[in-house]
Image 1 (cartoon, rainbow, N blue to C red):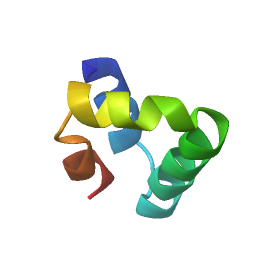
Image 2: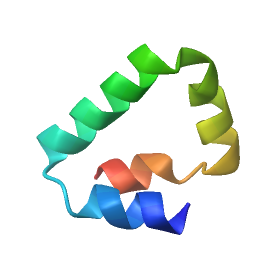
Image 3: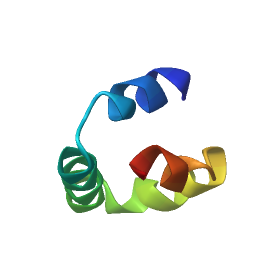
Length: 46
């Protein structure tokens, strides 16, 4: 998860939002797993 967090921090807030929206579109069943594995994911979006 640290790699994903580091990657997201290099993006603008609009880009981070786009990544999460794309993730949700492509792998909707995995979004709940992301929330479980990394509950701090919303902090990565800030």
